[in-house]
Image (cartoon, rainbow, N blue to C red; front, top):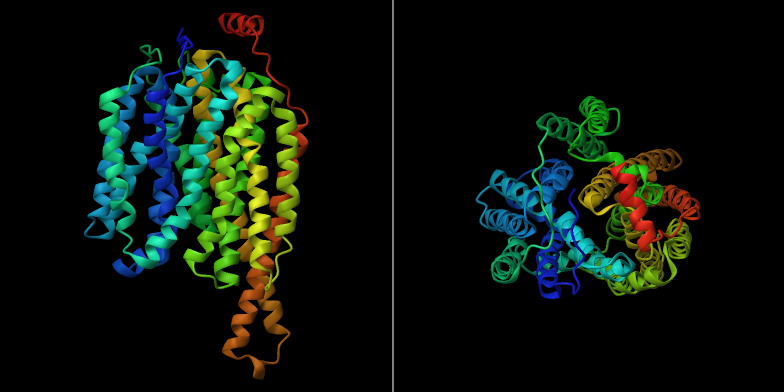
Amino acid sequence: MNTSTIEKKPPYLMLAILFFGAFVSFLNNSLLNVALPSIRDDFGKDYSTVQWLATGYMLVSGVLIPVSAFLITRFKNRTLFIVSMILFTIGTAMAALAPNFAFLLAGRMVQAAGSAVMGPLLMNVMLVSFPREKRGAAMGIFGLVMITAPAIGPTLSGYIVQYYDWRVLFEMILPFAILSIILAFWKLENVMDTRKVSLDYFSIVLSVVGFGGILYGCSMASSNGWGDTVVLTTIIVGAVALFLFITRQFKLDEPLLDLRVYKYPMFALGSVISMVNAAALFSGMILTPAYVQDVRGIDPLESGLMMLPGAVIMGVMSPITGKLFDKFGPRILAVIGLGITAISTFMLAGLELESSYAYIIGIYTIRMFGMSMVMMPIMTNGLNQLPTRLNPHGTAVNNTAQQVIGSIGTAIFVTIMTSAAATRGKELAASMDPASMTEEAMKQIQAQSLLHGVQLSFIVAAVVTCVALVLSFFLKRVDVSATALADIEKEVKS
């Protein structure tokens, strides 16, 4: 059995190196979204083609995350981190020097291969480096990296794209990635036990087809529609493969992804709440920029700056929330956080064509404040209930589930927005006198139609958040006393 010992004194220097590498990796995830139009113009591609720079990255990450449990169990954390960062650095250099779009896309895929295991690896190192009763504060720092880095990406990217070339986005990441590798060779140590485990290759095939098919289909649905043949085919094939993957895991002695973690009630409940919350979180990341840029016509840099206070709040609150979790447990934090998130999401559904900057920034920031109180506490509480040997599988399951649900949620919310906007646009156009249909009038109709779509999507997102709020009342704090831990280990052996 893989039982890592709790460090008497957490390896803070080593954790700092891991945090640095993870921050660089996570920051890269959201840097490119704002730059897609500039890349499209430079390479003369259409938007659906350029979108693969984001979609492809997500696909590779989604496919590789389920394998992270095997990698973390089998290989030393030092080796995994160094190899991952080397891959990430090579991909970053390829993207920065890309002579054509195909080379740039290949670079992004290599980047994704390097960064996919970074989150699960760092989380597992945190779990074995701190005693269970102090994990809240530690995971709060992890949340600071995981949430803040992607959140500040759009603001930083907006500034660079507006004043410099998009290649700077990769060029500025490159030296930090190289520094991370140097620091890892210098001071990174192994703190997790490993053991030889067999790799079920058929599970990998089912995982790639299952998760890849669903992620690809949902990503394409936002642009092609749910009725598209390719979308339906890939989602159906992915769903069948995923079903076969799940049933196979329960039959294997050493599954690729041990789904028996869902036998632990607080982990299962926390995972479900996290998935619902992830869908709502992704909705805000998609819908708010759509309103700010396409309805209000605000440029990317200014829109990024409007989102910055929310990112700062999430960064500041994450370690505070971790300490509050250690003291009060997950339920009160989740109930208050999801309550704030639901109310603020309903308020975002009330956005108008002339809503003030202060209102937009204020409500969005309040929503991020609510979100910051939810994710880390419920994930940490669930992981506290798992025996140590299941930590890699627990983190892999959480990351995979959020990736898949985030993708599906994004596609659904975009579909609601575009469908509602198209319907309202036809209604408004039909109600107008054809003689008065000037270019200015058409722009006004487009803005009003898209606003209607954004409003309806936020209403749905608020309802989804209310579902997570109801579930949060059933959360219980995991007893991490020595007796409870002994009972957990005894249960695993039996």
